[in-house]
Image: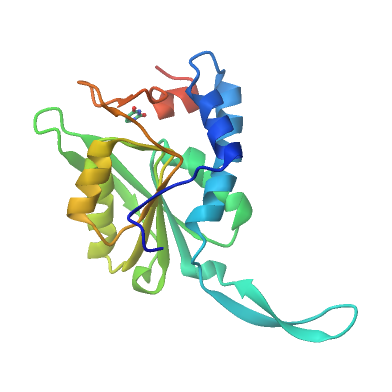
Length: 210
Ligand code: URA
């Protein structure tokens, strides 16, 4: 993947995203759409995964057939909204290793503070995909990448549903080597750090909280 930002313009992705943006979409509907869209986005973000081969027997003959080495993949979910994207991707790649990073924003400094981190070992040998539906200021994403790099990760990619130009710029400045895959690049962030037009608070919409 050579582009820093890839927008997945597939009609199914765009259609489902529009339904998710609508404020009247129910929690159940939002969750179902998020699972469906994550399968489609996973297709794009895993495009460069390395394959190995395995010897198999078809009804006609033996062959060396391509197969994913699922153990080489680390999916890193940014709590809590990342889990919505994670679930769908895990359906496609059940052998992937999974990590979780919890960050909150310090009300004084507005900087991300880590409160939880459990990630797979040997990150230097894995392809890591960070999943977080909303790339807003980019501060938590940049902090998550810092953390993974400090643990040896070298091949990192970011998957989100919506990105704000501010977040993309922050990531480009902090981690130009981390490609971002998203379904849309929205207009801007409002004064509360929400993406506009956006879809609201992704965690609240997927879990029915406020
Ligand atoms: N997080 C969200 O859930 N929504 C936004 O618009 C921005 C950050």
